[in-house]
Length: 125
Ligand SMILES: [Zn+2]
Ligand SMILES: [Zn+2]
Image (cartoon, rainbow, N blue to C red; front, side):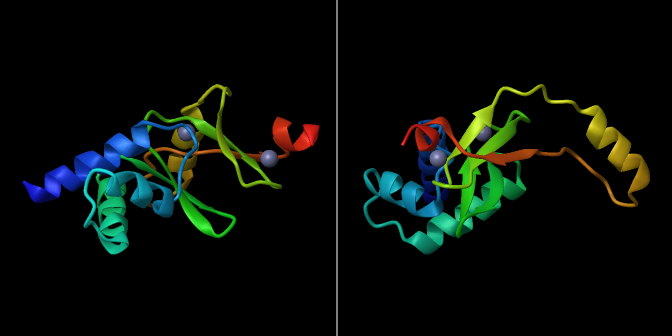
């Protein structure tokens, strides 16, 4: 019961934003509802949720891992200057994973493309 409440709060925090937050950001958000939750618990739940495909672990950008509440396969843009992570409207082509799966001994489920460059805000400043 307690555990599902934590998980729900984490998923809710993740789905409330499109910034692809860090564990620290999620921690601050979840603490508004569950003040006594620890950062360790947040990390443990994030790992669990991503291994069960309830959330997406995008990977380490800059120095911190970034997470996504949108589990529909999609691609991301990463700003090299400010480490912003944005969804990019680039067609998700599942055939890439199917091709890779043929050449690979394990089982490939999906892929995720990261595009790197400079975001508009950084270009304007
Ligand atoms: Zn930027
Ligand atoms: Zn995303």
